[in-house]
Amino acid sequence: MTLSYQQLYTFTHAVFTAIGCSNEHATTATKALLSADIRGIDSHGVARLSGYVRLWEAKRINANPDIRVVYETPSTAVVDGDSGLGLVIAPYAMQVAIDKAAQCGTGWVSVRNTNHFGIAGYHAMMALNHDMIGMAMTNASALVAPTFSIERMLGTNPIAVAIPANKQPPFVADFATTTAANGKLEILQRKNADTPEGWVQDAEGNTSTDANILKKAGALLPLGSDREHGSHKGYALGSIVDIFSAVLSGASYGPWAPPFPAYVPMPQNMPGKGLGHFFGAMRVDAFRPANEFKMHMDNWIQRFRSATPAPGHERVLIPGDPEREMEAIRMQEGIPLVDSVVSDLQQVAEKLAVIWPKD
Image (tube, rainbow, N blue to C red; front, side, top):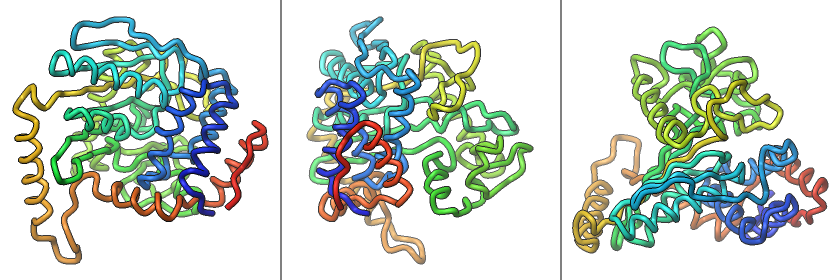
């Protein structure tokens, strides 16, 4: 089934309104969530909408949060999200970082007491229109075993960096610190397909290709898959995200991070409040004239694009290229939904008395 962006927007907005979000918050959440679908990151878009509804039903999401800055300096802040949707709290916090950068050159915001915020790239890209470099990261459900461990201690903990250019499209890197994000496992599960080697391990720490291995006490692997291929680096990156997002803000970290599935029990003896995020904004002209920088970013991008491709490859990509190209296609041709996601969303529509769009 394929639906237009506007059809999915209307439906998703209605769902967020039905669970009690204000019109403003429903609009913010819908734009953040659908940014994943139009950029081709299907694992983090409407496929997750029912998960947010289940968290709300479990009283783990506050549809009308009192989002507030609880500590700040001229260039830093800590935001408490009052258990609200991360899709709403994250844009609020990123705007705080942008506002502080406008005054001080850079702005840094750590967030506690929040939930899953969609794709990190959406929030980092908020800085682009201000001639700023944006950064966004978040900790997540503990599904990842550190190098040499069989315990699940970290989340997929993504990092996103968005950098403006002049005539060229912006550089946008948005990646999990695991070999593959959990959402990619979910996509394979819907297709009854196996994972590639190096994505996951079983409960005893042996390599596996079972897309359902997390349901059998297995774990995702850090970026690099194993020690010989650099998993210690992915482990370190995921740890940095966890510390910046949660230890720094007062959120729960490591194995105590609240799980996204509502049916998974909350960890015992949680050391903080909810999930955590971390955002940064850097005004380009705090370092060099913005036009000069963006001209050189164009030069950087053009030179990398002109790099000689390896055999079997047509061209060298710049981070953000595949998502930008997919956005152009899907805004024109619509967003494809697999049958299992359609069924899931139709159940949400029936439960909340929301009109499901026709194909």
